Figure 1 (cartoon, rainbow, N blue to C red):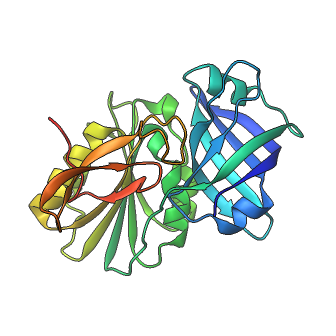
Figure 2: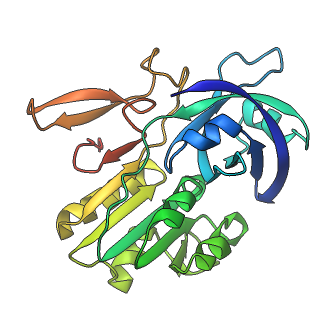
Figure 3: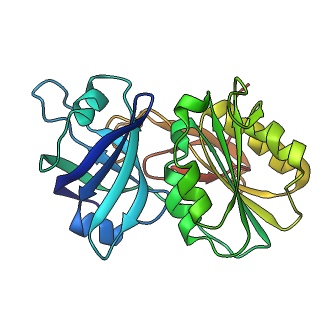
Length: 260
């Protein structure tokens, strides 16, 4: 159940190009959160009214701590980047529906850019064999690679410019390595073009694929319908719209309609 809680900033540091790693003391929200959900953070600067959705990277329910990572792209995230240890910030959460983790022969965890953080807690909770495929612009934007490796996962990296790992995108890397198995499940989050290509790959190989969508949100609670996405309703056999903030952000790749 969502609630507003005053969070205390435990740590906030820059870890890559315009990307910050923050730990928040959030006792109640941490206890109720699951992997793949997000929180809404309020920008109490007297200028911005709407909260900003930030994916949950890691959950420590016992200590009441939520970890997030965010990229500075505007006034709201700039405000967050300037928060110091001990500062207070209002947070609404947990929001949305997370990943439904299933037992399988191989779990393939695929993330691109700032879509990587919400997959970390997911990878922690997945048992058995898992391969993590991470896509970055270049070596200066690499995040969480070492931490995924510490989970015991095989980690593969691609970059747009080839400055680290495979030169190309994550789907090309998956095909190059031939890592997909028949009884595999893909958990993914990243830019829409990446998710679209991954969805097409999943269809071609008959692999189940879950996608966490990144959409602009205003209210974060389903009231404004600003984050609606087109999906195919298999029961009604027609195209309908669902809200990323309440119906998602995690969907089956088979139901999302990725426009060309």
